[in-house]
Length: 367
Ligand SMILES: Nc1nc2c(ncn2[C@@H]2O[C@H](COP(=O)(O)OP(=O)(O)OP(=O)(O)O)[C@@H](O)[C@H]2O)c(=O)[nH]1
Ligand SMILES: [Mg+2]
Image: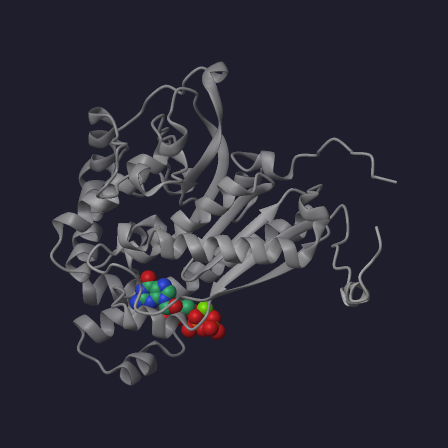
């Protein structure tokens, strides 16, 4: 077929295929979310609706792109790691990054009202940017996620302390900043405990550790849409949800709180194992979140009551309420599961995260 005389312009396109046999990491970040969160009255320092919406958008990305093996989110950012041998879009950087950013952003807007129920849609379109980074080995991949989770911890401890000083302590933002200047983690923990009766380690793990999305075994008979909601009417916990957790599931999870799905072993009292949740964790967590939103008058009240509840329950109980057997392996298939666990250190990478960096079968390159 004859070429049109205009077709030569295609030659101007550049090849942006990324190097083979290295890990592709895509990180997205909200543009101007300092302002966006203020405009939309996000609770300070953490808005459970905002975080849950971010998590939901990230799940949609993982649902669409099978080659993502783990995602980690905090504040207005999310990181997605692709398997080393991914051949998605022939590893073309702009195709991969733009697809992730576009899907994440559209999902954020699409599901907005399921979380911010009082506002039909955002007051203006949120923007996310994205970048791809290549990491040559497992060492850098582990350090990357350690870096992001350490950042979560540092920021959250600072923000929790800062807003306690401002909102409860009556300090001006400037005075609060001056008060925290030169303090380390221990000082901030101490201040929160003695002056604001807050045990930082008992605050929800979702705030302290961020959110981790993993591909894990889930019960085979679980409804696919219940695990990865794709339609608003199947969104777990949404006001229009068709999927509701079984009564015993709801009770188990409500007793434990949204972050109890699997607290890290390192934080459990000695000799105590991590609670194993056999029910669909995404369903349970969203249902809990939604119920709490519905039951609270304002987002600040809601946050405080969640925190208080969780601290109370952990104090009173001291050990996980729900312990169930893991269902037989043959009845399982893989799905995306959300958790708020430690990903700094070998324990994660040799345990639940072992599949992420496991060697893959070498594939012949196309000639
Ligand atoms: N109140 C509140 N603010 C949040 C929450 N999550 C994110 N933010 C805001 O979002 C900001 C994210 O940090 P950055 O990405 O550095 O700030 P940014 O304004 O988005 O700046 P750019 O990314 O450079 O465009 C935080 O500093 C907070 O102001 C939340 O749950 N509650
Ligand atoms: Mg940002």
